[in-house]
Image 1 (cartoon, rainbow, N blue to C red):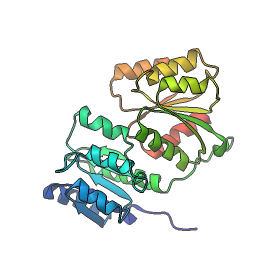
Image 2: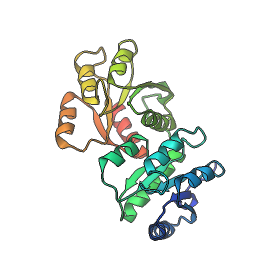
Image 3: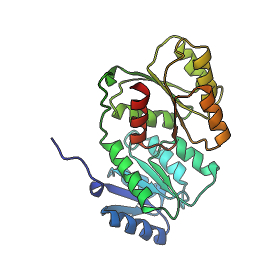
Amino acid sequence: MSEKMRITDLAITIVEPSSTQWRVIQKQLNNIGVTQLERFSEGTTAIADLHKFKPDLVISSMHLPDMTGTELVQSMRNHEALEDIPFMLISSEDSDYFLEPIRQAGVIAILPKPFKIDDLTRALHSTLEFIEPETLDMKEIVIEDLAVLVVDDSLTARNHISKVLTNLGVENITKANDGKEAVDILNSNFFDLIVTDYNMPEMDGKELTKYVREQSQQKTIPILMVTSEATSTHLAGVKQAGVSALCDKPFEPKEVKSLIRQLLS
């Protein structure tokens, strides 16, 4: 049996135009024991190198000379060879205009500048969990037989959530672009779990949850909502609609595993 990967084994590509910020990130990673680091100042050169050498994690700033961090991760997600590389954003940007697409792209973490060493360490552990996941261990349920419906209007988010579920041992995954499509699928298929986004066109996560609880033939199915929605009023409405559990976006694979275990036990 091979030895499990450790944080100190991680090879990380860092895309950061500021020499000062690069040194800060480098020092903090070195303090944790991570020394396999390669830095790029621009997104274009970083992407070219990623095709030659695939790191375990990419850490990027939001604002680069030739593109944004959002465009960088979206470019990665659009290349089959790069789409599964974990991505972390470290940025002082606090505008939802820039951050929401990053959240939807499926990232390991979004850390502020300056960031706390504990948050960085937690994000690196999430990276390890994504790279070398442990399947769900549940005595009464055969994970491979679980039927899960993933609902998200973002293709990259759907793929990221599906990848996390696959890593946990789930094999039967159906995807829907939004709540309306999910309703059509639910009318002709039965599932053990629904994982849905909150913000979606046509029918959002709250409306989908309400439909499932009030009109579907699967009123008791567990619903896990993955959302970047921070407004307490909206979240209160979602809980009232009947969602089984809420998970932040970006989420930690370990957290998703724990929630699914609770919902299906």
